[in-house]
Image (cartoon, rainbow, N blue to C red; front, side, top):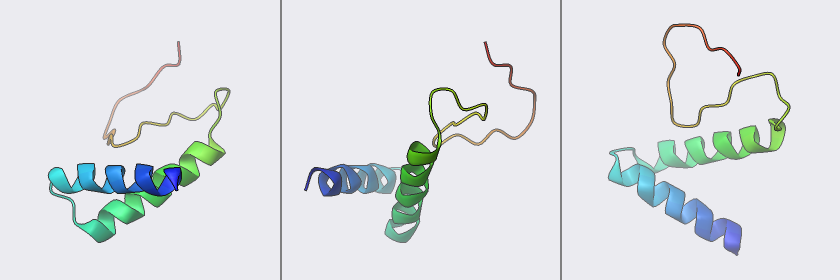
Length: 60
């Protein structure tokens, strides 16, 4: 029940930004998967809702 509430809030937030419902649902599922795969010690950078188009990212 709580997961559905979080999903609904996420989708509504994305809709306010102009994203259609289907894309918002797909984004939620992708971010849910990433949150399950990535851990604090992961060497990959996870930036939800960000698009990094160029540059180098250094882990501090």
